[in-house]
Amino acid sequence: MKTIKILLITILCISLYACSDDDNDRFQPVIAEDIEFFEDGEVEMLFDNAGADGITMVFIGDGYIKEDLGKIYGTYRADAERYFESLFSKEPFASYQEHFNAAIIYTESQSRSIPENESQDSTALNSYAYEGWTGRDFYGANHDKVDFYKNKLPIGYVTNSNTLIVLNERTGGNACFGCDVAFSGNASEFTMVHEVGHSFGGLGDEYELQNQNTPDVSFIPNLDNTDDLTEIKWSHFIDLPGYSNVGAYEGGGYVATGIWRPQQESIMRGGSTIFADLFNGPSREAIVKRIYEIREIPYDFGTFLANDNVTRKVIPISEKTKNRYVPMGCLH
Image (tube, rainbow, N blue to C red; front, top):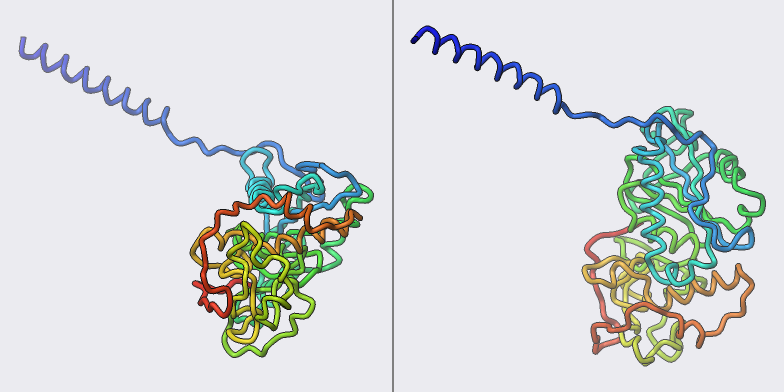
């Protein structure tokens, strides 16, 4: 009887071990892989609200290899959607989305590595990183390559386009005032929105850097060299209901003194409150003016105010002039 019990226990253990092996096989992690991919040069209109007469924001990635272009699990399209969602959730882009189109142009690179200092053929746009005058990485690309891909857009859509070049596995970003290209790493949508403020809105940086000369801000709508609230560029906002945080705050244009910005914090400066993630009132106006200029619509300040949907329950600020603020970090 004892022998029979030992035999039954042995058989049971063998069975359990076998089942355990089956379970291990059954529950091994499955790595999902795409079987369909977007092609190099393929264009996808994420939305088309205004046609060829509208403003087309164009996402072009660099440093994305074939597996990143997968139609289900690929990171290229996911990054594009994430960046467009961030941009068009910010005012005034959110309220004026009817004037915009959003296009993704797919590129396939041979390497995810963006080289330092000089372009190489390993990426679709020959993008490269270099040390900018701020001491941080700036980015450049082969303009002919960028134009080659932009010309894949439908006829007419290139004319009023603004390009977001997103570099895989990079951070930071840069852009020029009022040009049509902004660079950003794929790690921060905030940075890209900030750079679009430069490239589309013609906005200036509202933070300070060390050892910089006072710049010429005569052509920059969100910076001024006077704190006289009756003469400052955004004087028409002063004391308006709902805009009590608009004033003259010293520091901006990379210098701590002699240049004033409209609000204590904004997306063109950074900071620690809700306003650090928003365009300030005068900056929103500048962007709307740019939209209307492109769309050939007469601009009216009263209409802007009626459509300005940013929350106006602001934190009261008693001193509207010479309120200095040291940012938590500098943006490009």
